[in-house]
Each structure stands twice: as structure tokens, then as C-alpha cells.
Length: 295
Image 1: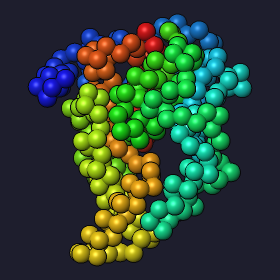
Image 2: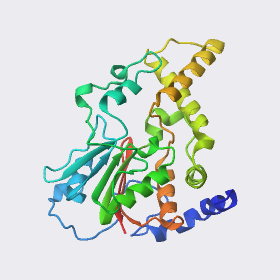
Image 3: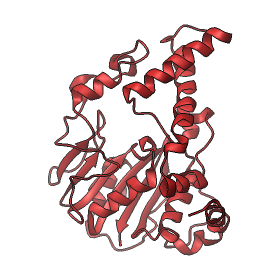
Image 4: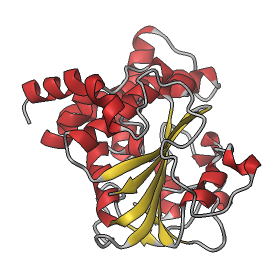
């Protein structure tokens, strides 16, 4: 797909929004107080639960059977005991904590306690899920994961690939306006489409530099780094960015507002023909929750 085609997709996007999501959601992106699919629930829920859009309640409502959670790390989704969850991550706990030893910091500086980190059942790159069979999972959970993928649309496509027909993909993404990404440039639709079509190598260094600048600014504000300026800050920044790249630090390659998230997923459905339906779109504090059903 060339740049002209990418531009055309972006320009046509908002014209197609209302006809793409069930119920005709307008692109105002205000809080949605009910699931977009007003189907009869297969599980009984109380009247108080019906308006509860917490992560845990959504897990009870939408998830069944056996599936995988990608990149749970220290924040696995709390799910009913009846579910069988296989945890997938790209490295062991030891290696994950080692990757946080960068720029004279350790996992403790990031507020991570080793005892809270989930030991993965499967070591695999969650972006590709090469060890997970096609149509093999009742559900896939990926909370605060896609922003760490260099090619998020490829990652989402592989989540769909391993999910059975009618299965659920449960996704949460951080709202960049309400986290440390707030000073970054938002990731555009053109950007993620180019990553998907050409590969992400063209934007890798830029992403590390953007993240590195935020990383250092936040670190100085929290007293983790010395307060520097001018040429000293420039040298420190270059050194830290080099360390982040060399260590395999899991940065936010992308930063989205809710409207840009929705734009990306709708384009994946309409123009890239990825097989899914929207079940839920819900801005919730500092994150946005999505429930997708494989079509």
C-alpha cells in the first residue's frame, strides 16, 4: 500500500464510522454507557453489574473457556476461577527484570516487585504468537500491550488468527492524555498503516528517541535522574536512549488518544478486512477498554 492509498484511507475514515459499529456510534467519542452490541446476555448479571464496566466485570461478562493473556507481567487480569488462562510473554521473569536495569535504574525504581510478576507458561513474541495455533483460543487478553508493539496492526491480526470464530479479544490501551505519553506526538493512522505494510524499521529510532525524552523528563521530575540542562542533558539523553535500545527495553512505540485508537481498529476492519466485530468501546479513566468478537 503506497502513501496515497494510506492517505485515502485516512481521509475516508470518518465517513464510515457510523455504519461500521453496531448501533451507529458517532465520532464524538464521549463515554458510552452500555455495550455497543445490545444482544441478550448469555450470562445472568445483576442490575448493578449491568452498568459495571470495570476490567473484572467485563472479564466475567465476556470471557469463557480457555485462552491466553499476553504480557500480563505484574498486572494480570483478574478472571473467574472457571477460566483457564495460559500466560504468554517474550521472556522469563529474570530476563524481564534484567531489561529494566538500565540508565542506573532497576525494576524497584519502576515500582515492580518480583513476587508480583507472572511467570509465563509460554515464551513467545506476543506480536507474532508463532507457537499458538490458529483458531485455538476461546479468548485473548492483551492489556497495555499493543502500544509496546512496533507493528500493532500485525499484533492485532495475530490475536485474531489464534482466536476461534466467535471468540473474544479483550484489549486495554492507555489514553496518552492521561499518562506519561501526554507530551508526545500521537501516533497517526498513516503511521500504523505504514508499519503494517512496510515494516516498522523506518520509525524505530524515532520511537526510541521520543520515548527516551519522556523517560528522562519523568525520571528527573521523580528524582531518579540528576537535573541537567544544555549539552549535559543532550549527552545524558543520547546515552540513555542507546542503553534503552541495547537492553531491549519495552518502550511505548505508540501513543494514542481514544479517537485514534478507534480510527485504527475501524480501519483494520473496513480496509484491511480483519474479521471482527466491536462488542464494547469504553473510555475508563486513564485507559480505554475494547471487547472484540472474531467474526
